[in-house]
Picture 1 (cartoon, one colour):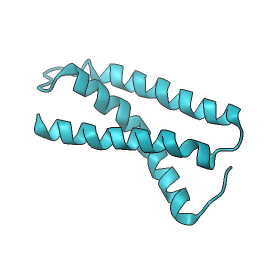
Picture 2 (cartoon, one colour):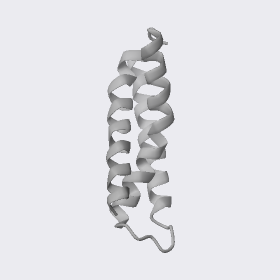
Picture 3 (cartoon, rainbow, N blue to C red):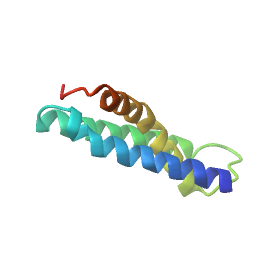
Picture 4 (tube, rainbow, N blue to C red):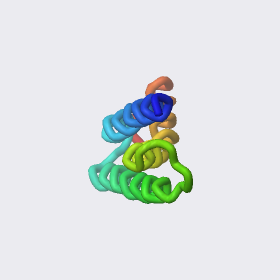
Length: 90
């Protein structure tokens, strides 16, 4: 269970980073809102699917957090690369 907590904590960092950096790299409030909503909805969907994993040894809430966070990792990685490159808004 400790491993799951560590993974969940790292994924929560990815979620926070992605949502904090979206305004920095996304033009227009409508596009920002769409980016936030899509990540949240897809995260909730993936988290809900994670609850159905049979034989889960960790708590269900932790499974939801991990599923929610996994969706945010690609966005966080892309935003971090944009930060490293000094990209502007797009």
